[in-house]
Image (cartoon, rainbow, N blue to C red; front, side, top):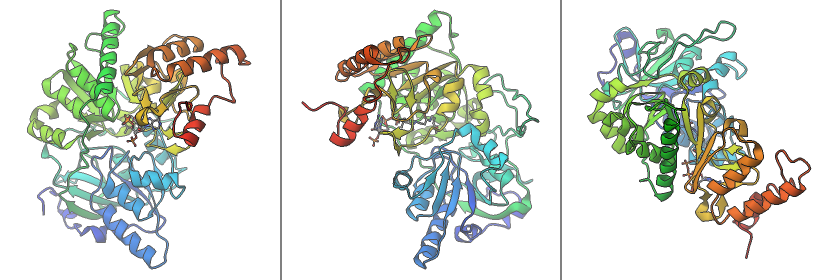
Length: 505
Ligand code: 0RQ
């Protein structure tokens, strides 16, 4: 054994992954751990995928519903999707194989606000949860489950599932023990109580997950790394976006609208988000805090230098270098980081109370500030809404960042009308591209359009947007939010037909 299982009864349940996967049957709903490539089970999903392939080869059906915290990794989403083993997936994914199956109509996907998932599972309309497969980093003598590099929905899966399979991963840092705050005080209405969090570093729960011993049908030992995908070094566009954000925040502090140490930060995933955090690292801000979903490399740097004093999240999302840094500085970092269930890390009540400064990426925004975070050209899912809606709608200031073009300039990310909407104009405060920053707060629709076109659109598309907007202003039947309905999505249809949003010639 790995020396991570200190409970006698659970130590007796250790079996090979193949045997553990045998507890999952065709038609089951399986709640798996995992959030942004951290803390997902490494062995059982692959064993399950192999069994599914064998059953399919024999001509029999075998598909399961898979619920997780958020995105996982090739060993989970990739393997099960490739085996055509997933009937329905929720609440978030970013796996290329899954994405392809979903967009070809071969796999169902429900794209859910991450804070809603636990409540939905308890409400019951999704049906029963048959099995939980949860990675932990250790088991204490009295059966406490030391969570892994993510907490996600694990508490809910362990509570709701009929059968539980635990993966104990000895690759996970021993320093994780004590870094979690698992809150067992949530309930369905009308029994709900206030969540007594007034600072990101407050503890309101316990460090370990719990699960009745008799529900655990198998324990599997692993020693495998998290996904740990790398970040690209910030490019010119992300550096410019970061610069605009920092300048704006300095201005807000100077105006007395935000305190000098800012308010708790939330930062999404991806290269731009990481660059904004790097920008804050070379700014003059001190005493920063974060109330966010994921701790990525840029945030670890801020925590390491002490520029950020505390961070609350539900998962790590580190590159290989970030992981090495965490291991080296674990004793300092573990004092500054708390990992919570995602129903708490993303809870609207807490986000609103703390006054979070939320920063998320977008696929496209329209001139009035409606944001599409999830769909390419209106019908193809990219990833999902993730936590962006939990944070954007409830933030003190909600930022959305993006390069002004995609696909080498063939796509403008500022369009006349979004082809899908995730965040409405009412939930979007500030939009930032490498071109500039548009502070949309307090502006009526036509002023928003003028500012967004002027500040954020790429120069190649700015005259086209102005032309659309000015004609809409003259010809639209309503002048509150002027649109030419027959033309509003013509940029998208042109791209689909000709490969560029720019008119030929
Ligand atoms: O595709 O890799 O094939 O070239 O989308 O785009 O510019 O690398 O940006 O990594 O920040 O992702 C909205 C997808 C942005 C992300 C989104 C294509 C682009 C590229 C990625 P390629 P970039 P990012 C907390 C918050 C929702 C979830 C969320 C996201 C790929 O931020 O998933 O916010 N957000 N969670 O080429 C066609 C456009 C495009 C486009 C970008 N207009 N048209 N393709 N792309 N814009 C975290 C969690 O919830 C876990």
